Length: 280
Image (cartoon, rainbow, N blue to C red):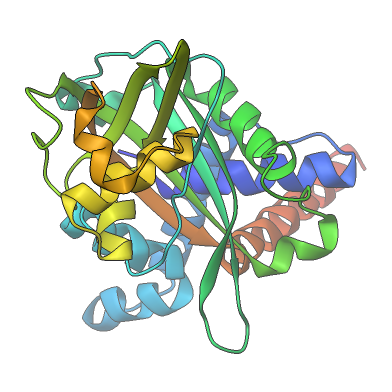
């Protein structure tokens, strides 16, 4: 499933892009974040370790919560996704999630209101073609932030207000009919043709549940998203091809990324000072 490290990597990639600097690699972040968690844990007494860790590292609580929830519904409307041009479906199995190194994926950026805590979609793009995670997350983190044509590009000043969500897609299955899927469990990818024109669109697994839609409302909305302008009560006359899939999602706020990044910067400075002392 998607991890806190994947979210950190998306923030790191976007921050580096907007600041015109070199980004840390996914491998470097995974190593650093492991040390970050261990160092925080080592400073906490065993009796209150769990509670204190959750306070010290908010991402750890989000990891635990997400593991329990799996890919169930989220309270934040975050996944009005856009499809990339590469859309060959990959049959990723949940059996390999523990050591997953590549996957179809989507990166979603949301703006979080500092006053109300409400979120609004700021960009979401992904692909159904399996990506090596180091390359795919980096590429789509930037693409979703600055090339989603529904929105203006995200600017550097917006970073503190952002939340990122990474969804790794799994379990692709052709639906027996348009209703052969479950709200809150499945994402949908539809395709159809009408009057010589081909249409296609997708919603990630949490969209229908977040919006409180029925199956029919979800399908009609998805057809509208694809560009279909037919009468709502005639949607069933369209020959829809529907593929259902599941997603393993992780979310993170910029404040959590900033907390880890400041720690990593300080560790880097301490290491440089130690090296200078050794040379002296």
